[in-house]
Amino acid sequence: MSDQWNATEYAAKDNLLRVVRGEAEALFEMAAAQDAWERRTACTLWRVRDIVGHLIDVTESYFTGFDAATSGGEVPAALGLKVMADRLNEGARAHRELTQDAALGRLRADFAKLMEICQALGPDEWAGQQVAHKYMGPLPAFFYPVFQLMDYGVHGWDIRQGTGRAHGLAADTADLLVPFMFILWQATAEVSAGTEPVNVGIRISGRNACDYLVSVSSEGLEYTPEDVSGLPAVIEFDPGSLVLTAFGRVNAGTIIGDRAVADAFLNSFFRI
Image (tube, rainbow, N blue to C red):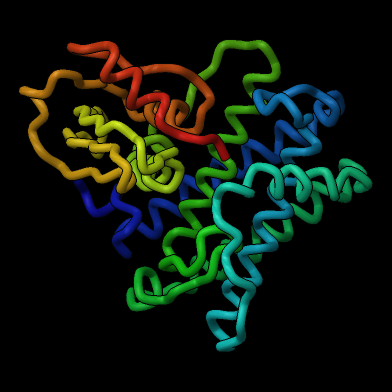
């Protein structure tokens, strides 16, 4: 894995922020179109205006975390991911009273402020500063520009999907997000004491190409990079398909071997 495509490394900062800015500008342009505001999106409950409201909601919650990290102030306990979908929907809809111009102006200002915060992060802060996330608790600072890439990259895809035109996810965006999809799966694995163990191989192409052994059990999800050639089921993904599958936008992947095992794995997650 090249350091410039591994967002956990400070060496990737400039590359990551470049890609985030590109995705944000593309979303701003789409959302500013005269006929866009009430258009449906891939998020069935949200119009374009609600995606903009959602981005305001989450970005401003990141400021709370960074303010506490620098001031030493306290933040509320993490809410957990189980309530995340409902709370995010509430947060998005809370901004419906804003006009298109007012909402986009506020979001642009929020985005610029967060990019300033991320640009100022040094080598020690990138992975060493812990910043409280509203739902997940304390996380290294590098997660926040990555969250912005998820926010703008995936929701930009949602807006394009709503137009009915064929489209795809940009390679730079997908490649940077690939390693974080395993963390997303880990955080959203739907397991209980009775969960039957499932082991699959996940094979990824692109700049962060790798084979992973992924195990789901009553203990949760674990993943390790290793050769998966001998496993009963292997699922091959290109980077874009992995990201969109992990976020529940599409059902993708090429299954090699036991379809039942692969299906059991792919249905092991709750959506956020």
